[in-house]
Image (tube, rainbow, N blue to C red):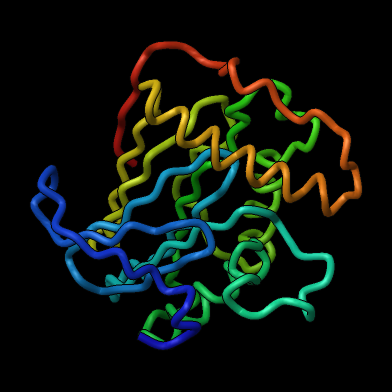
Length: 218
């Protein structure tokens, strides 16, 4: 697989629920394939774009943390993958290298949630959601489905060969705590970047949402 190898998702496993080979994406990673497999990730305020050539059956997913980088020249490619502007460009380029055609691409986009109380102070999820919609509009890529914003974390399962996606809202305490931990780390990084060392960012004991588990396919 071409591209920045440090950013290509490398956690391969067999998914017993779906009975296929799977790849788990972490923040700052992407993966492109034409195989009958599933790409999976968990999203809080982060966003994943799932792009696919509907004729060739080549698809891919990314997972970015922030909409753009104020100083992209200062970062190596692996670090730049945390930012939507680079992550989207990388995914599009790798799809085209694999044989996809831009005019046949469809997109399904997910994430951008405000999963912690007081998340609106930095507004990361909203910014990510707005960014990915604007980017795809400018690139003239059709958006076939979206599940953005809201107040619960999500687990995304994407099948590039068919374009099917399942979305599961996470409400179990262990799942929520893991997402909260990642969100706090991201917010801490942003606070330092914005030179606000004494800001109290979040109350980790409060999660907005309900106790209903939702799962559907797109």
